Image (tube, rainbow, N blue to C red):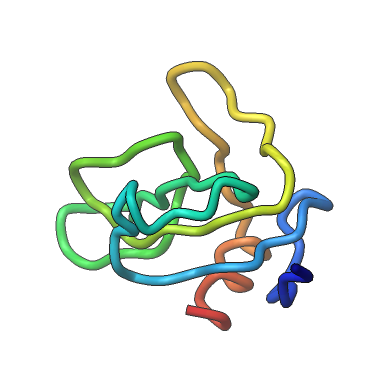
Length: 89
C-alpha cells in the first residue's frame, strides 16, 4: 500500500505525524516510528527526533525508511525542520 508523504525529513519521507503517542499495537510493521521532543518544560518548539521520549513529548512521526539518529542525542532539528513539523502537525 502506498503511503501519502507529508514532507521529507533529511530526505526520508514522513507519512504520519501526530501530537499523540502511537501505541505499539497500532503501528504499521512497514514504517519506522520516532518520538519528537520539545525544547523546554512548557509547550516549546520541536527540538529532537528520538527513538523514544517520555518527558517533553511533542509528537510522533513515522517514516518509510529509518532515520540516522545520533547515539544518546537523536536527531537535532534545524529551524527549517522545526517549521516543517509545525506546519504539518
